[in-house]
Length: 318
Image (cartoon, rainbow, N blue to C red; front, side):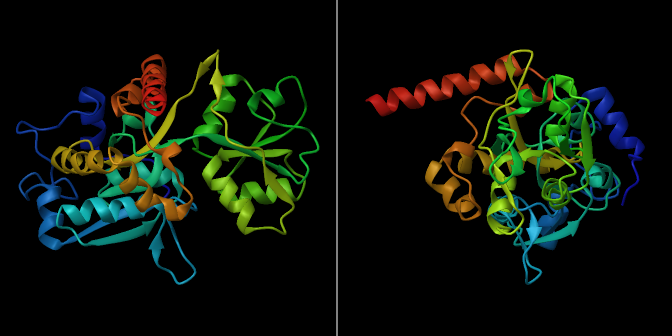
């Protein structure tokens, strides 16, 4: 599961065409890349089952105490695939760094882990439109003895920041130029690093760490509140979504069509993801696209977010 080799087809398609279709007819292919086996969408509709990879991260995608697959991204997946006539969503637990490589090797049909949409990832997989907005937070010892608030709190200090391997916060820390960092493999490892004093803070998404602190009251940790990271004065707008193989265009388009109906309906969005701690604040703003984030066009992403916020304020003011 830890192999980083991608299938030649997936790499060639991604390098040449980004998120566009691969092949003369623009259709997707079945798992394993067999061009004559019909599309992945047709196959999973015929079978009534889709296999998705999940990362075991609460509250996005994980197994509960009874071993049942659950989480906000899984709830969205079940809703969307159900509308496509696919009633069974099977999960495969995969280490974070192996999610896209395993997808391109045909080990499963999609990644459902709330993966942030980033340019380097878009070169390897096809991301759906933004599904859930992210803010970051810091997990710190109870009482926050160092008074930490965000990444800038570490500049010019010898404090140690823990980051999860492959998570977007690791990239933020690198872009800002923080050097005194340690890498952990999971959110539980990060919490343990703070609890045992090996790190002064652990950075990850606000929803994840807030939930983790709430469920572990004896760990001696708390979170500092959500924030949007800034690099060179620009807010790092971040959103996560499902990932597909670059050639699975039919499946991606069908998913996006159903996703738009959910994201465009605040009540339905909260009904699906609300049980996992998400609110309308995590609903992607109108106008924000996966292409903006794949291109790294944060200026456009910020404009979309600001426009949506202004529109919401106008409607509230009447």
